[in-house]
Length: 335
Image (cartoon, rainbow, N blue to C red; front, side, top):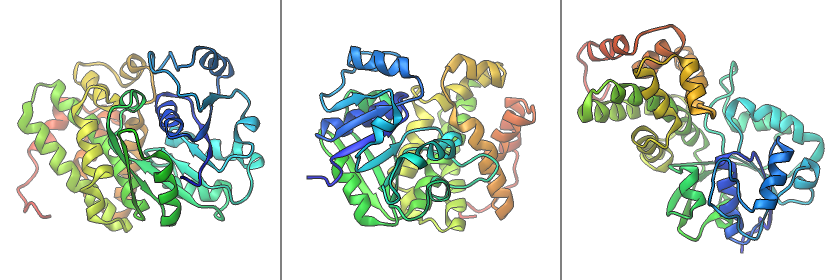
C-alpha cells in the first residue's frame, strides 16, 4: 500500500489528466486542478477530459476540483504536470497553500527559459529545499496512458525512498514504474529528446528515409549523452526509459507534437503556423534554445541540436540544416 494515499495533480492538460487517471486506478484519492475552472467543472460532470482525452472515462477516485486551495488541502504529495516554462509560476502559486515539507513530483520535460535550470532546481528555489522532489519521465503518450495501454516510466529522486513511494502509487494495471537517483540524466533525456524529435520530423518530412532517421536518433543519443555526462548524469540512465525509450517514442510516432512540428516545418510552414496547427505546447521549440545555450556554455558539441535551433530561431531552411549536418567532417564514432 503506497504512503501517497491522496495526491493533487496540478495541470489538467492531456498528460496531467492521464497521470491523474493512473494514480486513481491504483486507488489513490486523486484531485485534478487546472487554470480553467469551467473546463474542470465540465470534466466533473462528464467524467472525462473530452477536450484532450475524449472517450477515456475517469476512475472513481479521480475528482476534478476548480479551487486550487481545496485541491491541495490535506494531500500527501503534489504532482506538477505543467510545461517547463510554467513550472516556477505554478510553484509560486502553490507556495502559500502547501506545508513546508510537502513532497513534489514533476512531470515537466524541459529546462527553465533563460536560466536553463532543471525542474528539481526550480522547485527547490520556488518552494524551498526542505521537501522530497521526484521527476517522472519516460516513453508515455498521454492518450495511451489514459486508455490503460501498457506503459513504463522512470521515477527519479535523490531520495530513493520517496521515488519508491511514488512508484508504488503509480505501478499497476499495466503501468510499470522504475526508480533511479539520477535526476540529472532523467531530465536531460526528457528535455533533449524533444529537440531531436523536431529534427527527425524535419528529416522525415523532407522524405530522407529510414537510414537518415536511424542516424539522427543514434547520433542524437550521443549528443544527449555528452551533455548528461558533463552535468553528472549516468550513461546507463540514457540507455533506459528516460533516454533511449522516450527518444525513440518521440521521434517515430505521429502522436508526438515535436515530431509533427518538424514535419510541418519541412512542408514549408512557419514556426508560428506549425504551432498554431498543433494547438498545444510544443515543448521542443522553447527547449531547443535552452539546451543549445547550456551546451555552448559548457563547451559540449551538439550539432543536431544546433541545426534545429538554426531552423527555429535563425531562419535556416530545413534543407540547408540537413546539408550542414551531412557535410560535417569525418570523425570517430566514439567522439
